Amino acid sequence: MTLVSLWFWLIALTFTLYFFLEGFDFGVDVLRPLLARTEAEERALTGTIGPFWDGNEVWVIAAAGVMFSTFPVWYGALFSGMYPVFVIILLALLLRGVSFEYRNQVDQQRWRDFWDWMSFAGSVVPSFLWGVVMAKLIEGLSINGERRVLGGIGELFTPFSVLGGLGTLLLFMLHGANFLLLRLHKDTVLYTRARRAALVWGALATVAILAFVVSGYVVEGLFANFGVLPWVFPLAAAATLASIWLALVRRRDSLAFTMSGLTIVFSTVTIFIALFTRSVVLPSTLDPGFSLTLAGSASQHYTLVLMTWVGGIFLPLIIGYQIWNYYVFRERIRPDEGSLSHGY
Amino acid sequence: MGRQPWMVYGLLTVQQGVSANTAGEVLAGLIGLWIVYLGLIGLDIYLLSVTARAGVHQVPEAQIAAAPVPNYAGDGFRGRDDAP
Image 1 (cartoon, helix red, strand yellow):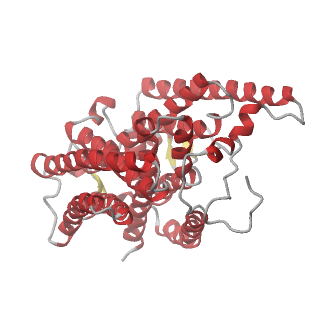
Image 2 (tube, chains in turn red, yellow; image 1 turned 120 degrees about the vertical axis):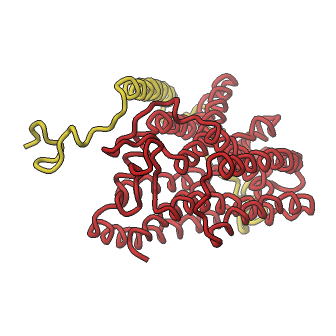
Image 3 (cartoon, one colour; image 1 turned 135 degrees about the vertical axis):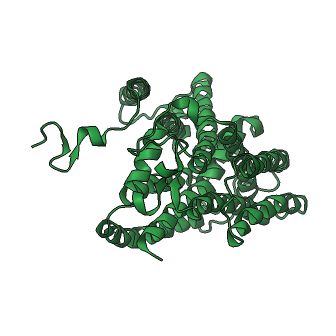
């Protein structure tokens, strides 16, 4: 495997980890207004993701940083081509991050409501828009001969990319509900509500993902170049998604969470395989000849060697401390007096 | 150094390095960031002054409830019998 391919797949890895991890904390924040009825319950739900959400967010920074250093042309075309979307994602993540810190600083219901709203909107919006970004990644942008992206915000929302957005939003809600089943005490009413939410939103997620794949296959012909092996991944995603329902009905919570996680992993890998099999990182909608190729948008060899050293040291380090963090905060949570007097 | 038309002196001109984003897009993004950051600066100053006015020995009620101290008295933590 060449360094170019290696770094392409490391970028795929960072995005996959990001969607797997931040997927459930987005999901919990989106579900919170639907599940919590009291202040103690609200705090318990926030407490399930309290120690993890910002660690999860590290992966999107890693993804963008790695993309910038190893595939600057790809990075430039994607981030300036989808500039309005990325600004909105950035603002949403900003307000959501602050909501964790500021929500309980002033003892007023209006203040708390405002930050709850920011937390909700700051999770719904990126959950949707990341699906749009991933869909546009395989659908392509209007890249001209000078490798600049023309066309404004209107071009970014096609039926295919909107379906992709709905797909990620609903999948993250399902993933979040499954995560809650692992983090809440089983005797709480919140646990029961989370279980019901997983069944309802899981069904909707299945419909949206199915519609996305069918539209990608039939309408856009995106998987035309797939050989036999790449088909394993979309089929595996479909199988894991279907098995979640079975796991939920049989009350196998860890299995349900693993399967929703694997659905996210296989779906993300499918998108990157759709790019890799064509050796194109970002197709041009104007002329296939203008598409950004794998080799043509990578950094110089020396930069890739340097990045391999940096990545080889820091990626295992980050993965290591995150595993440790999840181990430390492994206890289940219940809404009680303690959560009110102790914050999280 | 750094004179026009160079972005990276002798290697890349500004013309080659600039994206095709419209001025309107960039301005809208800039205004959005300004509004959010100014709002957050205002809130930060407000919260700092509330804390400062309360004095060293007095922590405002809402912040006691907000202090992110997890309840370690849960099932999995041993040796903390005195915990609330």
